[in-house]
Length: 207
Image (cartoon, rainbow, N blue to C red; front, side, top):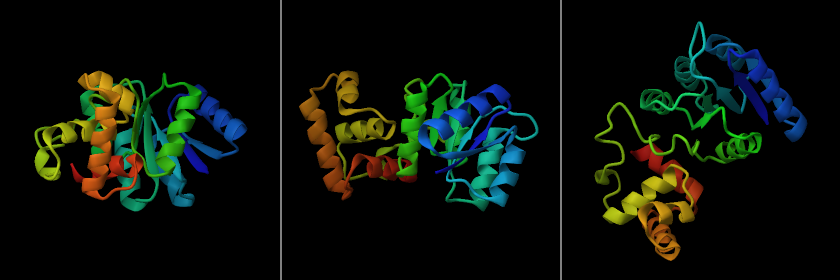
């Protein structure tokens, strides 16, 4: 897999590059800001970009928006320290497929890179409850997007899309694991979708 790491902190760039190349055998280039990341994409588009949000010259959101316009197939995971709704909303609206915190363990970052490669959207546990925020928060995730689902199914669908497991959903909604499992199966059947990964992608494409 070809990766690009965009971060103005040289230590983080180099540490991630070594981690991903040595442990996974992936190739990783680095950029110190969004403008350089865009230029590197023009030279050779990567499969996935790990993008910081706040960088000089061109920040991560601006870069993500520009890169997605020219290279829509390139997938972008924001990797930052910020959990503000505004940053999360901007990242999603710019086309990012993921939003992780820099405190995410190394194996967690690798796991989520693999998930994004397969078509999933990923969010760190520290931001998943606000990840559905957008510039039009009243309209995102409303029932009109998925009229065939019950109110409970819609609630569970949204939590699946933000990365929660059945166990986590059950705990959050005070339901049994069996109830959640049956609801997820019902949602998959109603929407004619085969698995949870495609379910999450479908959610974020339609809310």
